[in-house]
Length: 104
Image (cartoon, rainbow, N blue to C red):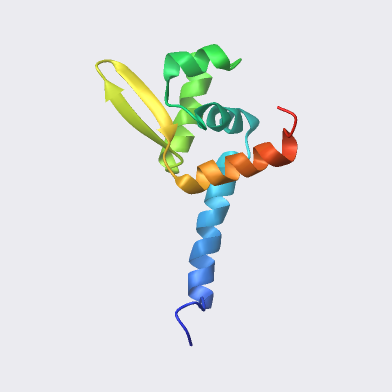
């Protein structure tokens, strides 16, 4: 058996991780948050100005993305900045953008 061959246990772990990843992306508001974070780090205030969500709803979506390690945070004084925390997320958002928003 070579190192490139995944065992069933490995595949199960990977599929579980992929399912968690995709579940976090399955909400259009969280998807839009990630689209806005694709090329830049933004504060909660800046994200709130770009999205038609209440601040509490946005905070709940950010909490899900944080819990699943899809976004990273950086604190500067009292402001929290968000960015995409996983290059796989960037790759997937870019692919989704190419597939569903080709003219934008």
